[in-house]
Image 1 (tube, rainbow, N blue to C red):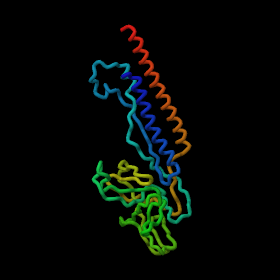
Image 2: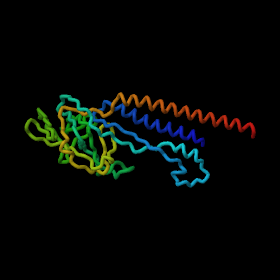
Image 3: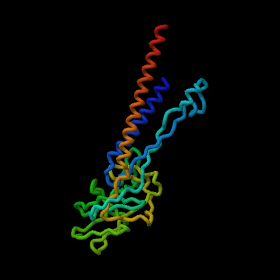
Length: 266
């Protein structure tokens, strides 16, 4: 294969992956509690160097061009989002490190058989509501929010004034209802996004959130996506893809001319 065509194609594929990531971030720039995806790449060594120089007839000039790029595992930007006051008593935001715990279906064994039984669902989105059973749930998905006892928090039907303090304790006026479970993964590398609001923690190993983490009632955490920067990046990546496809066309045309030229003398 024409090596220039190969590198141009690799660049276009890389650009399309970047475009998907940036477009998804931009689409969720107003989603409550959304954490931006961060895509990183590293240079790939030429195949000959990757295989310890097993090809004796390699071209050193081509090796110097490199082997394109490789994608690193997608990371999640867990930085603090801006808190916005809503006035809704069931809107809750976390100020600091930590996640709310959600009820998770306990089925499967992981991999292709679905989520493993010990996986846990976490969330930063705190737009809660009360379902028909009285449970505190995510307003967008209806998934129950867990308390420190590991069970869904139930708000009495006659609750007139729900109050949530900075430690996550929930009161109906002065009567205690429960306490929001706020935890941290022991290894944030095990977090995987699931759906619009949740994060699945592979293995389910957690620890208590730092004592500095505060629960803010009547607030919501905004998305960590900077919409202006994301839009600028979208334009930049689109132009990069366009440039790569033009290079592919140029390489293809050069190969065609080469075949036509040498074909006349055959």
